[in-house]
Image (cartoon, rainbow, N blue to C red; front, side, top):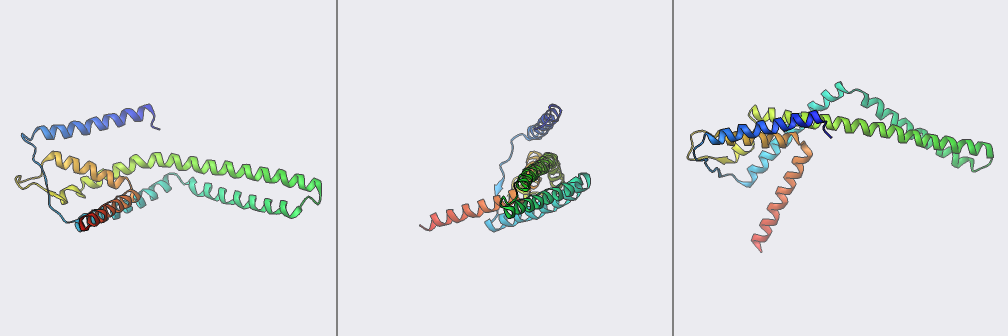
Length: 210
C-alpha cells in the first residue's frame, strides 16, 4: 500500500499526464482516426520485441535492487539453514522412537523450536520480497515509460495516419503510456498477452473455417 504522500504524488502524476494528453488533443481541431494496417504475424513480432526489452529492464532492475538491498542473500541462506535444521531434528525425533523419555522430550522441544525458527525466517524473507516488490513496481513502470520515450513504441508500428504528415501528439502520448505500461509490467505479463492473442486468433480461425 502506498503512503499518503505516495498517493498524492501518484495522483499528481496521473493528473499531469491527463492534462498533457488533453492539451495535445485540444490542439488538434478534429482528431484523426488511425488506420490499422498490419498483419497478425507482425503484431506477434512487436510483442516479442517488447518481451525482450522487458527482460532487459527486469534484469537491469534486478542488478540495482541487489546492490541496494543486499540482505536477500542472507535471508535466503537463513531459510535454507532453518529447513536443514528442521529436517535433521525431525529425523532425530523419528529415530529416537521414545526410547529415552527425557531425550524424546528434548527432541520434541528442539523440533518445535526449529519449526518456529523456519516460520520466522520465511516470514522475514516474504516481508523482504513484498517490500522489494512495492519498490520495484513504480520504478519498473518509470523505466518502461523512459524506454518508450526513447523511441520504443507499439501503436505507431501498427497504426498510421494517411491524412496527416506527422503523428498527432495525443497519439504519441497514448503510445508512450501504453508501451511503458507493457514494458514496466514485466516479461510475464507480455508472455500472457502473447498467449491470449494467439489463442484468440486460433479461436477466430477455427470459427471462420466452421
